[in-house]
Length: 444
Ligand code: PA5
Image (cartoon, rainbow, N blue to C red; front, side, top):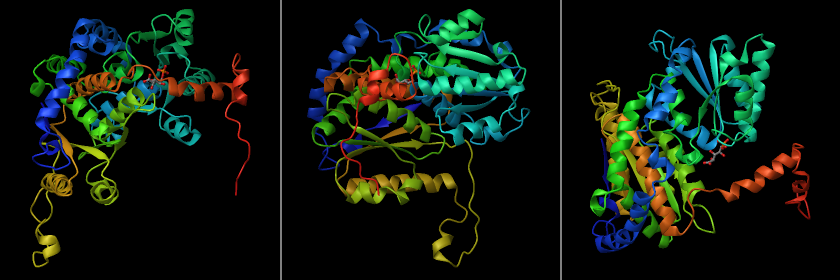
C-alpha cells in the first residue's frame, strides 16, 4: 500500500504553505482533467491490466528462460522504467548472484547510453551465448538504441551465433526500421502501443519483458496499477492522490517554487526518482513553463544537498519517499557504551536510524518554512510500484492541463537529434549541420 502525507504543505504547519481552501479550489478546476481522462482514456491508463500486453510478454517465457542474462538496449522512456523495476524489485546485488541463487531468473543490465566505457563494461560482463538482447525503441530510430543494436548484432554474428535466437525487439506495431527488420528476418518482436508515449510506457511490453525475465511479478504490478487508476479517477478531491500531487505542485510552482525534489530514503526506491525526473521534465517542460525535477537520496544527500534545501533559496517543493519496512535490517553493535557519540546507536536497527533521519530532515525543513510532502511505501513489492507509476502518470497529465501544455510530446528534444544525425552523416539531414554555429570561440 502507498500512503500520501500532505500535512507539511499546509499553511497551518508551514507559513509558506497552502490554504486548504485554495487546494480545494484549484482541485475543483482540475477535476475537468479527470473527466477528460474518463471520457477518452489516455493510452497509459488504457493499458493498465490489459491482458493482451501481459499475454504477449508471457508468450516469450519458454524461450527466455533458456538464458542467464537479459540486456535492454534503449534510452529514456525505453529504459528508465526497466532500471527502476530492476533496482527496486530485485536485491541490489542481483546481477552478482549465481543462476541458482536467482532461482533460475535472469540477470538484467540496461545499456542506456553510448558512452563506450559504459557499453563495454556491460558487454564485458555477459556471455553472448547465454544472453538475450532486447532492443527497445518505439520510434525505431533513436540513435543510441540503434547504435547499441548494431554493436550487439555485429558481436553475435562474428561469434557465429544466430541473432534471431538472441534478439527481441520492442517497437511500434507497424512503423520504424526495427519492425521492418523483424518482419523481414522473423526476429521476435513485441509491440509498443502507439498511443502510449515512451515515458508513460513502463507498464507496457517496454517494461514488462525485462521484469518478467528477472522474476518480477508482472500481474501484481498491474494489480497495483489498476487500484491506482481507480483512485486517480475519483472525483472526491481528498481521496485522489494524483489530483492533489498535481494541484499542490502547480500552486507552489505559481508561487515561484520552480524545483521539485524527490528524495527516497531507500537505495532501492531511488531509481523511482530517476523515472519521475524524466516524466516531470519531458512532459511539463515546454513553452517556457515547467518545474525542474531533482532527485536526491536519503540519507546520503543530507550530506550534500540539505544545507541548500534548508537555507538556500526557498524555491523547492520536496517529496520524501519513506519505506516503512525494508526487506532486510541490520543491528548496530552494542559497543563503546561509555562513549556518547556511539552508545545511542548500539543495539538499534539501521531502519530506525534511517527513518529517524528522514523525520529529522522533514521536521527541520518545516521549521525553516520549507514545504514538503511524503509518500509512504509499506514495503518493497510489485503492487506498490504499479501504484506509484500510475499515480505519477496521472498527476503529470493533470499538471499538464493546469499548466496548459501538452504532456505527451517533446518538441524540445528533436532539434538536437536532427543536428546529431547531420553530424553523423544521416541522409536527409544535411542542412542541420549549420544550425547552432557560434560566432566566436573562447576555449582556454
Ligand atoms: O518519453 C519519450 O518519448 C522519450 O524519452 C523516448 O522514450 C526516448 O527518446 C526513446 O525513444 P524511442 O523509444 O523511440 O527510442
